[in-house]
Figure (cartoon, rainbow, N blue to C red):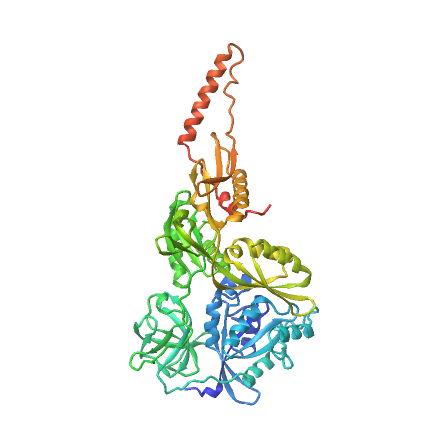
Length: 601
């Protein structure tokens, strides 16, 4: 058993691309855990997608034996957490498993939106936070300004802030010494009933679900029977170990230690992030606080481009769900697109990652419908409905009240782009709550805004109007009443369910007009007339017409009576009427992509 005084559990928190994974690499190099042969950049990021995008999607942990300058041996448990707001709950559970954090801030860019969001999470757990200024070797680094920003925005004293270069390794050893000196050892009574917090889990095809945990109190040994608090189901622990960074088997864990267990758990949903593990023979009275069920926030339909690939898509979604319990899907049918799935995601980045993994890892070609959020609808018969698909919305006459999710949005931006940001947020029905200057050149703009406005194209436009310098983070506040309607698109009188959207009444006309025009340009011309309409309820608010492709049936009439030509023209007219009555308009994939890019020219 390890002495608790020789353990330090810490994580690295940072905004995307501020050097978190690179600093973790240098720590592994410094402590000699990774050989030169197996060394690679972003070692703890296991997915190709993580390394390409420079982001962390899944939390990882590594147990680092370290001999300090005072000659004592320590065990440092580094928990590498996601940085994006979509994975906020996973970050909070990882922070609950730690006793302190290294706050990494890019010395060339300063404090960004997700830096603040994750710091506030860490402060909620009363963690000791050590500020670390990274990339000080770059000519554009401004250490003094960034220290001032940290003190102004977060309130941390930067007199002892560490200055490092994760790329070259400068100052990394001093950072580890500060972790030992300033972070407290873990608490918890080793003799109390077992309480272990699950802060991540994934599915392994050979061992079942692998659970990452931190022992808060008590002891856990291999072979003991455990119980999970949320389900009450019991399992026998078949394997205990830690990642250092490769797997090391360990017979038992005591309070304060971090490791993994395998217990023949068949489904990822049975070992949820945030749940508590206790012993079946001597259970704890209460779980570790903070557990909640993660619910999807953004929904969209995913359909195979070829209907024959439906089973392949279903199989790919099932395999992805094995390793991502926050991702959900159910079968649905669209008149326009055929058989597909309605999928739920934590946020926009999560949706983008799932779609890219489906196309890259499983070679499935997809058509994705426009993303939508979850609306709350109170019907006239007293029922409360949660609507994630515009098709499921009841008739307007049966809706008593319509509520949409509102977010608190914080945008960090250089002062010269503030005007552009304010204009964009006002256009997106935002309500300004705060505007404050971090320094003379950095501003935080706070708005309350409907989530549907953020989901659609807000992030792309934010980057465009700030030349890529703005960063944002958001959190759900509540549901608020709104004047919302369903906008339907009709092709020759038939509604296309995959193009329906829920939208604010004020924006319905402009959106419907723009979408109808885009579809007119996208849908290829037919031998018959194609009418494209946008409708709210029974009222048509926009109409476009694609004229039929003409064929000169009178070309062979080079003389004679006019009645011959009229007869041929009448026959053509009748044929086109019959064709319009019986023919179907095949919507190309570009039509659905056009729906996602309304407003772009």
